[in-house]
Length: 332
Image 1 (tube, rainbow, N blue to C red):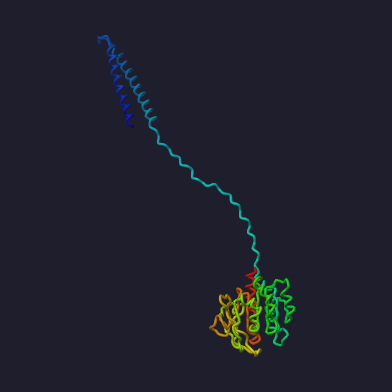
Image 2: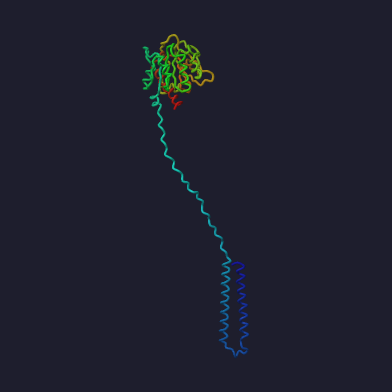
């Protein structure tokens, strides 16, 4: 009970006492002077009624005071929790069905459909066309011009987008001059793959072939006087490991007796790689096999027919596979 409520209850009790005194005083005044004339029963009833009235008045006052106290006691405010924020649901559009990727042809499949142009000047020799035999062994299609220079030039100038051009020239009086004028732009601009076997580079090194050897990053170094063993400079290179490995060019049987080919070297700032040569420790000179144009071009400056046929055919299968692969990477 608050101080204010206690004060009100005390005041009610005081009022009751004061009222009782007043009533008794009035009753006393109204009583007859002589007790002999009064009626005791009547007096008692009046007193009892008066007390009852006072008691009722007191109870009514207390009830009123209690009601006021109840009204004055204010309940503590009730805090209503705000509802938890729920972000609106975003209706996302369903992703469109994935479009199946166009199946990528395997290297073997692309090689089967590759456009290959071949010039091999010993095609009619008793030695046998080793390049042609290798292509047949691989099951590839090709345009074979044999030793017909006119047909070869015509095919070079045709609209056919050749994937690979092969020049297997062991005679010294054949592919030179204007042929390189046509071949070089195809290699440089069209990303055509190229394999060249020419063991007579010394005769034409300063001629039009420079339009190809200069950007390749190789140059004639010296005449290789005799046929001898050839050393692999990087046995892990794909040219010696893919798809064939385990062969070598150690074994030889000379057919051309006037020279064993030509040594080549790397030029300043060259990106070419010497893969094999006459000295096992020389990595930038005395080369006999070089690759350039990101692996799309291979130069071989010794004669196929001075070495064992089985080794040469495995080597050429690797030539063809790797140059075509690099061509397909450059021209998806």
